[in-house]
Image 1 (cartoon, rainbow, N blue to C red):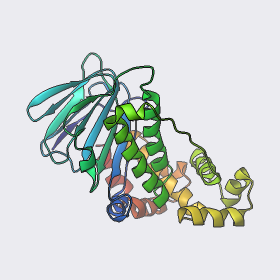
Image 2: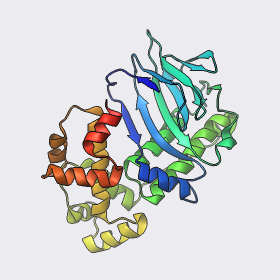
Image 3: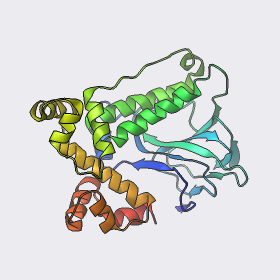
Length: 294
């Protein structure tokens, strides 16, 4: 496999789910049908290029938000423009890249599952989602953010299952364009979500259980019990998992030294950081950086 990419794109973001989480996704009664393994966004991705002679182990969705790019699949070069989508099937050779003069901004998702056949009409072809006053383009991209932000807030069963349902809805919004444009939905945030957002915004502050409980107006004991019941994690266990996720981002997208990342996230002993990181990702920080930020 050959992979090439520019040194990074300003405001890029990506989540690569750990192997232990992917193993769980394959057996969970909801997620085994359809689930995300990688997800991200590359804005104005100048010099972006990928070539996989043996394909990838997942289907790859590329959604062009703006600019232009191209995909080579089955010997044909397909050009992708604003609001056009292409899904590459798993394990099939391909290449793709940004236009040299007007590089694309893309949302991308790698996905797998037993029921991907439901969207076979989308796989291996270009789909134009169109532009109109009722196109609901912003709603579709908000749905992408739903998937991303839920995974960014941790890998508890509810988040993973919700992300899978959102992925199904996201793909359905492309397959059933007419129906999607006629439906509106609403979101609301509960106490658990608010607490997770507070954790996420304070990953480098070393907050404790009392700080989180105070933020949402609950006693520490009541909040701890509620959080455990809702997520299957203790609040501080969840908080530490979010720290590892932030560490992954630093390792992949920054030049910070591993020791600096450890101290920034409150691991005063780099060895402790490395041990905690490997427990969650099956890789040491050094191995993770070598694999995803070569």
